[in-house]
Length: 160
Image 1 (spheres, helix red, strand yellow):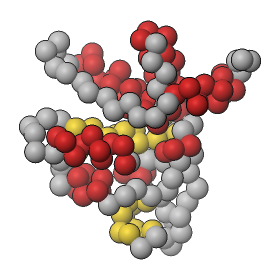
Image 2 (cartoon, helix red, strand yellow; image 1 turned 90 degrees about the horizontal axis):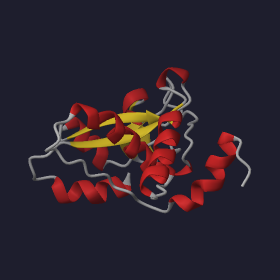
Image 3 (cartoon, helix red, strand yellow; image 1 turned 30 degrees about the vertical axis):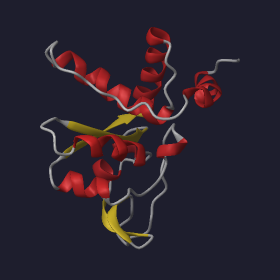
Image 4 (cartoon, helix red, strand yellow; image 1 turned 45 degrees about the vertical axis):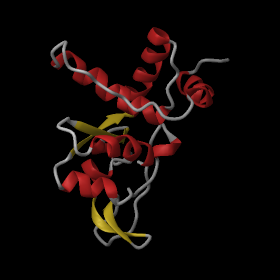
């Protein structure tokens, strides 16, 4: 959230498309995710009216993401404002998509993205084939992916 906002802020007044990518976990339909826009609703959490994962009584639901940094039931107020204003489009990437993007960027470019950023890389991989070659995709790679290597290895059953 905060890393994306830092990048979005520089482009708010530009005529460019901006996309935020949430943690789709094991899929929205499973309920095991942290995608507040795709699978949540408006409510109040910690005194802030925002989108969050909640039940019909307003109780906060559990979340799931391969990325600890995205595994949270709520989202800060800036993102809902930008979504509702139509300025930023939001989507999600599943754990499997983020893990595949993590591996692809690491192998092809030698850049180990943080698992949080791997969700954005996954969306870029989906979008790129649909764009003309003159289009530019800018991805915010925040954090260090080396901290996630052991976690990814454990998930994939690889002994390091």
